[in-house]
Image (cartoon, rainbow, N blue to C red; front, side):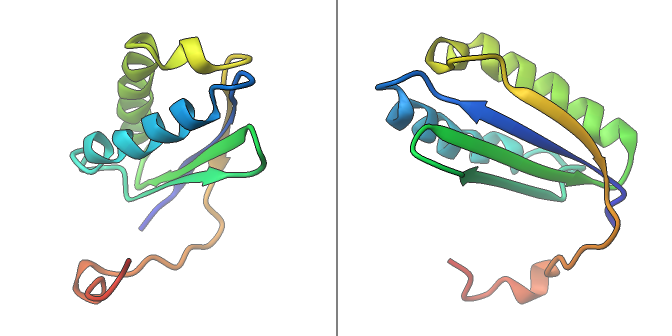
Length: 107
């Protein structure tokens, strides 16, 4: 069950959109190792605007994920951003999350 989340808005510098998209795609492998990151989606909202939506069972999981994300930004992602990412802390009101047994055939 997820109880807390994050919505992170990311704005790429002009000409850096592909780099931001690639870094988000590459981050998936690291996020998959985070036991408490139950949901993680990287979205494109527009030509240069991206977002990450995550959900966690508790605050400790959210904080661990944030610490790892700050490390990823420090490793070079920030050079592609027009502004600092905007982090919004959320509470999960309702969620539909497939179990691991139902993921067969997912893209």
